[in-house]
Image (tube, rainbow, N blue to C red; front, top):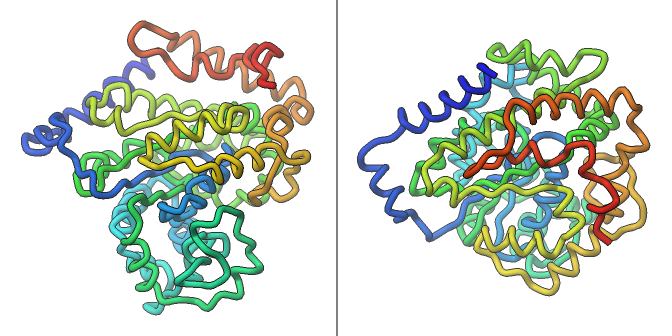
Length: 382
C-alpha cells in the first residue's frame, strides 16, 4: 500500500515541479495550438495496438508512423530500455515536427530514404501518390507489402514535405514505458500532444506474448536491462512469465499521472479498451475520431466492421494486420492458457483491486476492467 501511495505522491510532485508561470497560464486558459493535431498511441506489446494504428493509417487526413522508435532500439541494442526513454521522447519530438533527420543518427548513413522507415511497406502515405502510384490515400483498404515494396525509394526530405500537409499526425509505439516521460511534449504548446492509451485484458496479453515470445526476444532483453526497474523487469524471464505484474504496475503509474494532472492534460488524454474496440467497432471508432478531430466516413465504418468480422483468428503471424473474428480473438486465452496461468494473472489484479479500489471522483479503471467475471456471457456483445 505504501508503494502505491508513494507513486501517487510522485506524480503530484512531477506536475508541481514542471509547472512554470508562463506555461501554466497558457495551459490553464486552454489557449493551446489547434493548427495541427499530434497524437501518440500509448500501448504495451500485444495489446492490439497495430490494429488501432491501422485505423489512423487508413484515414485520408492522417500522417501515420508505425513504431518509428524501432530503428533506435535496433541500433542501440542491447542498451537498456530505461536509459533510452529520453532519446525516445526526443526522437518523437522531432518526428512530430516533421523533422526526420533524427533517423540519420540510427541509420549509419546520411542518405536516408523511405525504405528506412519501419513498416514502410504498409504505410499508406509512403505507398500512395505522390510518393508512389500503387495506392491512393483517400481510398480505404489495407496496403499489400509486396505491392508497395516495388515502389521507388524516396528521399526522406520528400516524406517530410508530405508530413507537413496533413492536419493530423499519429505515432504508434510500444517503447514508452512510463507516460511521465512524455510530460515535456504534453506541456509544449507547439506539439499539444494528445494521448490515446490502449488497454487489453492482461490474460489475453499474456496469451499473445506466449505465442509471439520468440519475436519479442530482443525487446524483452532491452527492457530487462533497465537498471532503474531491473527487479521488476526480471519477472519477464521467470518460469511463470508473469509479465502481467509489469504491465499492471506501468498502467497504475500512468493512471496516477493523469489522475493528478491539470485539466488540460485530462482533456488531451483518452483511454481505450481493445475489447470494446473490436466488439463495438463503429461506436468506439466514432469516439476515437471525435477525440482526434477526424471525420468518420461510411468507408471507414465498413472497413472497421470488416476487420473485426473476419473468419477465425490465428496468431501464427502475430504482427500481421488482417481481418479477424473479434470474439475469437479476445476469448482465445480461455482455450490456450491453463488454469494456473489464468489464476496467476487474475490473482495479481484482485490484489490490485484491494489496494486501489474504485472511489468517488476518480474511479480506478483497472480495478473494474478485467476481474474474473468480466467476460461472463452477460457482457458478450451479439
